[in-house]
Image (cartoon, rainbow, N blue to C red):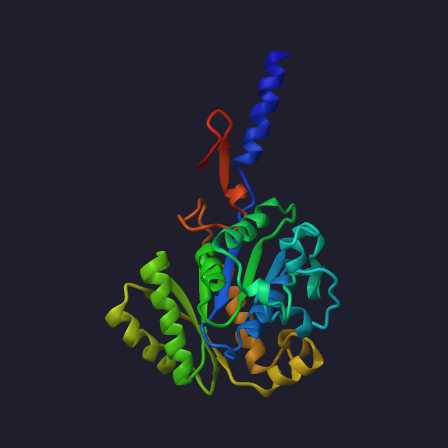
Length: 295
């Protein structure tokens, strides 16, 4: 009996020590209007089409728009979770191709003024979800608020979306500077969005790296050049993702290629030292000390 019990416990421990590893990508950019949400949803829909279990978190807690862009009806959102009205699992809605959407609130000032402890609590709440998720994509707000910094620090990959405007470049640089100097985030993947050609995208990337290489200890990688495309605007009016509304359009093809590339990015086995989503799935708790031990 004792031997059987020990075997059962060992079997349970092995299951705990082989967790589902979730790829976490934060999409940010500093400036508003650079197309973060369209990039987020284009990637998410493309991954979901491939059979991946995808979750999108609308982390623009004051001016949420993911549900609007998808034409979804939302009852409760993250503000209700923070108020203790419901659990995180209660607000998740289903989007195209079965992807899960975590909606945020809109027009609520209090949600933009959360403390760092509240940020951490919200991030850790994802560890309690029973959802089996392959990829979690976080669509942040514009600017360099504490919430943007928290979610950027929590991700395994930070996708910096920039367009060919001086304010976009300076705002992206400011965010990279803050994350690298004060929060230890030194690797960034860059999307040149709404460009007229691949060459223009490369030139835009060069403008950004020219200043980061000179003044910052940060590694930037250009991962996509998404062309300016009227079909994106048309898909927004239709409340559909461009990869669904116009799958052969230039922007849709670029977003699909980006999604395929993102799926090849490695997932760290253990936390990198920053806050991590689904942290309970990446750590094993030592019951004798109450401490979490990395695998």
